[in-house]
Length: 178
Image 1: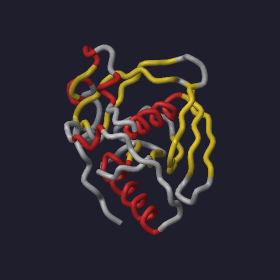
Image 2: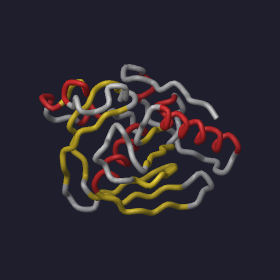
Image 3: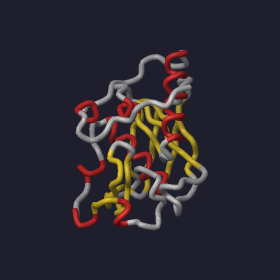
Image 4: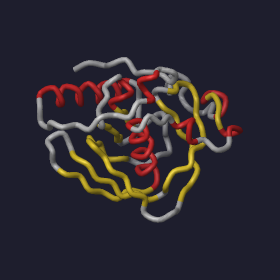
């Protein structure tokens, strides 16, 4: 399909609240999802939200077996999640460093719920119901934030833990542009 341009922080389209998907299993939806996976894979991303490519829909994709940008992260199942609803399981939260394809070259420590229940639909309209923890839960929360117009720097509490990836994490591949 097509690798799309990824919007960068500062573009007002990233601050909008996305609209629910109303029609499933359409050629247009399948083409959009294929483009999103092509775009995510081309950028070595862990996930991508439709608003990041300028599409104002409640649609996120995520997942990988191995990711150069997060070399220590466990596998996350490749998923299409539409019209998601997230519910924390308990009050437990932890800080963890995140990057974002819309905030290239930077990383920041962001608090996220450690355990999460989420629901939504796949591209065929089939219901998805899962519990996740650890990095999987972090990725889902990060991507769904995009649907609410939230970029991860908005969640940072301690700006001494925010900076350029190549300075803070020189061991990561310098050719991977967050």
